[in-house]
Amino acid sequence: MTKIELMTRFAVAPVFALSLAWSGYTAEAADAGHLPNITILATGGTIAGTGANSTTTVGYTAAKVGVEALIDAVPEIKKVANVKGEQIFQIASESMTNDHWLKLAKRVNTLLAQPDVDGIVITHGTDTLEETAYFLDLTVKSEKPVVMVGAMRPSTAISADGPVNIYNAVVLAGSKEAEGKGVMIAMNDEISAARDVTKTNTSLTSTFRTPELGVIGYMQNNAPHFYRESLRRHTANAEFDVSNLDKLPAVDIVYGYANINPIALNAFIGAGDKGIVYAAVGDGSLGAGIKPDLIEARKKGVVVVRSSRVGNGIVARNGEANDDELDFVVSDTLNPQKARILLMLALTKTDDTKAIQTMYYEY
Ligand code: SIN
Image 1: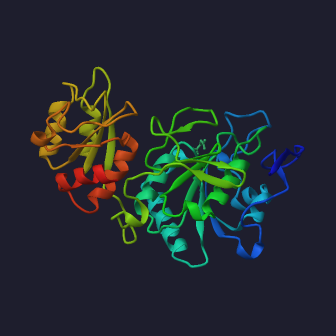
Image 2 (image 1 turned 45 degrees about the vertical axis):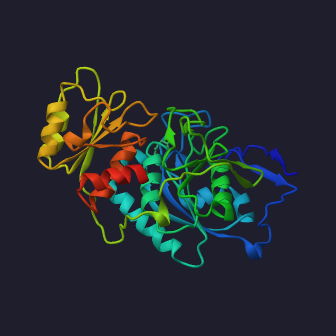
């Protein structure tokens, strides 16, 4: 059985103050001749962040450390994969844009089409990690593993979670069991599916949760252990093709609350949005302060999706609104930020609301 020993802390190590030493290492792919080839695409985030000192866990600067330093800080990954690093962006993930997603998806598809690339790991800030993961889940054209990873503590912190997360992500991306599972997130020894996972806590390392449905597996002792998988269409089985796209249709989210007014909605419509996701209260309920303007938006050709800010459960079609009559779409169980991604991609194919509704039930 693999024994993990906590090593001494590198007093002056520039990144990842803690490291792990493996004794009695027994990973499947220990034969260097058969190691999988994994490309790490680095985009920034806290995993590449640095704080003023080892006890700084908030108020640090994200996206400072380069991909080679991230790799060098976890020498154990060279025992389980032939790793190449590529710095595709260096940003905090709150600044992620549609343009970044298009560039990233194209790069992932180019890499995965190469026979000498077996899997991809993407390091990313946690704030919008679930969104990038779902975008890739719908646009990557390969069964090869794509694993996203972040960290809640900057690289300079005591017990930084980045090193073990990266290690697990590389092991996962190099494993046969991970093929065909869609884009996954490896954080905190858990494996989550891109469609269903969400960030639930501002600071805890256990922040990524899949409410009620649960993780799809665990990482333990240098191997993934799977227990379930998403039944929804993704990756090679998805119909969306971004290879020739340089722009996505404009779609924004309007947040629902008591005393709702239509000012933000109408500003988005005035700015030319093609679709609106309404992050409604409850089961997609439309307050009197916004319902007439949503109906008006639909009459102008804007696709209106009723989602929910609740974060759990199905938004029922023809439940809190007569969607058939109003020609609205419901987001099924997708949270508003993911419903927005599916709507943008759907609008690259059609503006037929029946076809778009079917997509919400399939993806
Ligand atoms: C970010 O999302 O880039 C900053 C926060 C984080 O990575 O945890």
